[in-house]
Amino acid sequence: MKKIIPIFLAGLSLILFGALIAKNEQHLATGQSIYVSLAPVDPRALLQGDYMALRYDLNFVGTVQAPRGALALAYVLIDSQERVLKTSFKRQDLLGQGRIYPLQLKMGSGELPFPASDSYFFAEGLASCYEQARFALFKVSAQGKPVLADLVDEQLQSLNCEAQQKWQNGVKKSAI
Figure 1 (cartoon, rainbow, N blue to C red):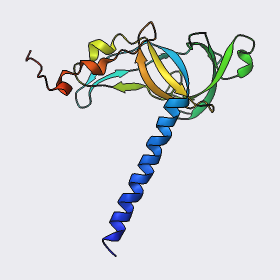
Figure 2 (cartoon, rainbow, N blue to C red):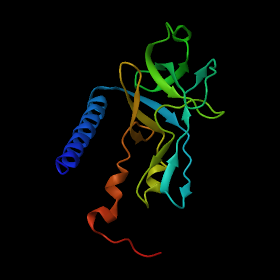
Figure 3 (tube, rainbow, N blue to C red):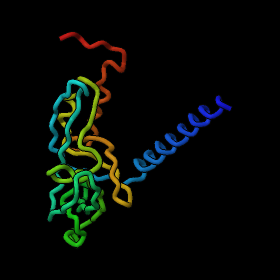
C-alpha cells in the first residue's frame, strides 16, 4: 500500500500538468492575435542569465486605481494589422473607432499595467537578436486572458532567435 500512494500521486501530477499544458496549447492555437508595441530593455542578471525586461506601449486613455498585482480588465483598439492603437479601462472610450478586444492586465508597482509578462528569458548569446524586437505577439482568449506567444520585428515577423543557438546544434562557441 505504501508503494501505491507515491505512484498514484506521481500519476495524478502528470495528468494535472498534462491538462494544464493542453489548456495553454489550446489557448495559443485559438486565441486572438494582437501585437503590442515594445520598449525593451536588455539587462543581464548574474544569477538568471540573459533576459529582456519588457515595457509595453499600450497608449492608455484614462487611468485606473488598483492594488499592485491585481488583475484589471481593459479594452484595446486594434488596427487592420492587429496592432494595439489605444487601451482603456472603459469600453465606451473606444466605441465607434474600430475593433475592440478585452485584455486582462496586471497592475505593476507605480507603473502602468502590463499584460501577461514583464520579462522574457532567453538563451545566452542571443541578446543581439532579441534587441530587434519591436512588438510582443499575444494570444488573447475571448475573456481577455493574454499569453505571450513571441517577440517580433517591425514587420510583425518572428525573430527566430532560437535558430541561432549554436550550442543546441553541438557547435562550440569560440572563446572571447
